Length: 155
Image (cartoon, rainbow, N blue to C red):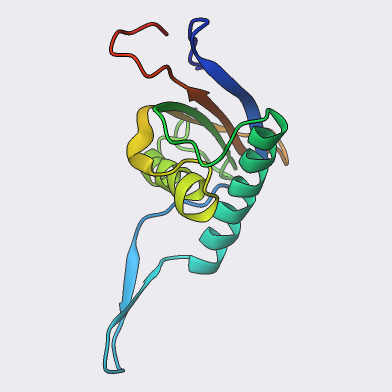
């Protein structure tokens, strides 16, 4: 599914990031020292994935001449292409990882890691989907749309 907007919106275009998408979800707490330490489940993988996403989207935005970080309303359209398990229960990936956790990793890649968007509160619309990928075609397709700063819906 792709978002369609009117002429008042500026689209980054589709950015493809190859690799198996890593969800951002559960945290682990380690105690033993004087202060508990919280880390993400799959922390190293998640960090590498967010860095890769941030790099590709930043490169695309800079090639369009966008001044970063964006400090305006944006819409994001993501389509995750996940590895098909050996014995899939469904024709569609109605299994883990959860779509919202995959999207959370993208949101943080664009804000915390990549500084593409000033704050994730600037995201006013998210469209997300997940699909099984073809052989060796895992990754995510990301589109960022700059929305006009007007109250009426012109896009």
